[in-house]
Length: 397
Image (cartoon, rainbow, N blue to C red; front, side, top):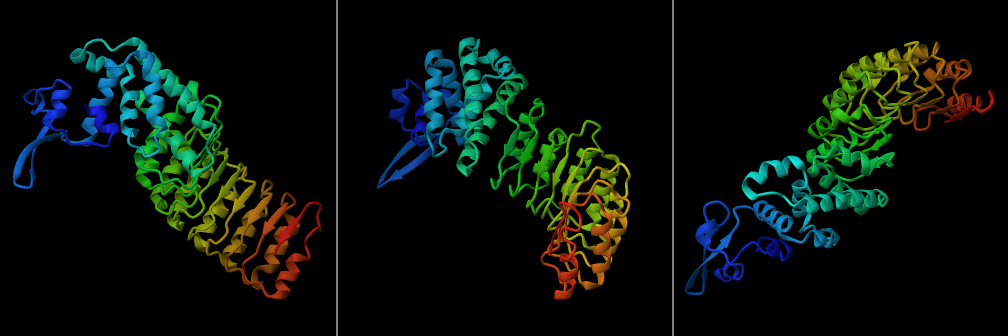
């Protein structure tokens, strides 16, 4: 009855429904069913409902898990997963959770032995579904479907299964898909046992600190970490990223923190973490209100002789001439920087001599972007004239 209700979007049941399934109301009213008085014209009748839809969905999952022939359970799961309106989503998570040995161990005391064949069939279905959905990402709908299957993996609480299903996946990208803290916990569970995932792209996923906290234990494992355009993160969120950078097992090479609400205060903790980290080679801090004081902190990190940062994006960070001169001074002894983005700041002709000095003397520099600043035509010409003075050098003003 519970499963039929989920399938037909029905949460209210009559005496006729109970009779159909050989149920006696008195057996279930205390814990599973509630009586409701329904008035229709002048007549009054009693109907029944579960205390919460989640309870109905759990009972539906339990009934199917324990009574459906193991040979039919995969067909049932596939048909339920094939619906597009989400009615079976929580039901499917419960079914996946019932395949967990720990769950079975707790419930078997009350419900008897769980069918081993059903447990195996459900686990196999989860494994195949995750593999299938992992190859169909790219669109918002595809990403959402893949994330849903990762929820099944999470509910199964089986790290070995996560390794088997995600063993060939190198990039997890959920760009533009809103992620809840629970979604973030699911991603963390998927990433932690896997050593193959190299890039986690969560650009513009509306992640807040609570979500990033759930992701925290897995952040250090990814070589590429993209958290750009998550404006609710702020300094406290970046502190969690800084903690990942301090992890002795940190693998992060490309760190993208553009437009995350970082200020000069939060930059201090980030730079402190970078001073002990030798893995980061690409750093994007564009679109944050760093100002000259924040950029000065970043400049100090670049003075570190062990710094391996070769790509630095500081576009639209409220940088002025004074901060630019600090940056140039810091880079005078740097031998690793190849790409520097200073677009969209407030640089004027006053800092043109310093920038020319940087471009001419920093032999490792290959590209510098200066579009969107406040140079005069003469200032632009002085900078642009350096284009090609060194083989492969690109100056974009």
